[in-house]
Length: 197
Image (cartoon, rainbow, N blue to C red; front, side, top):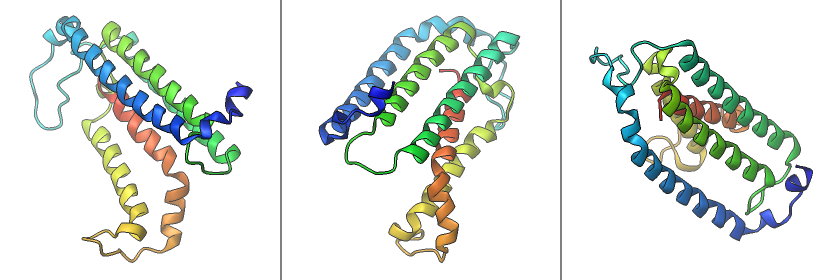
């Protein structure tokens, strides 16, 4: 692990480009795998309850079990803590920016890929997500919060209203810049595990 964290070849721009294209390829291939595996979920979807309006999340089991909930919440918690740990490590130990990748970036990509695979398996074995226990508005709210923080951070550079900057002090934006990674990670991971795959 220590050798990975000290690797110098990762700082190369070409490595970052390979990681980008590798991520895109992984996403395309995995999207195809999800599409091909979709018929295996027909039995799980057959028993969905009728739609009950705007606050209803249709893609949930009518009768969840201990294991459907435990796996959704357990894997979500592991994914979330792993990413927060990586962000903390990066903030406290990685002191400079680079045009390439830091080794911690590669580890984060690997952790995310592992949990994508795990969520796929979890969906096909237990078909459940966090939606069983929390409102649909929490998933939407997490994404809205992420977008609001992006707008706050981009205000000094791009403005908020048609290029016009909102009168926000640097003291408002500074903690958002410092801690946005934790909130972004929460919003993305929470929304990812909210839904069955």
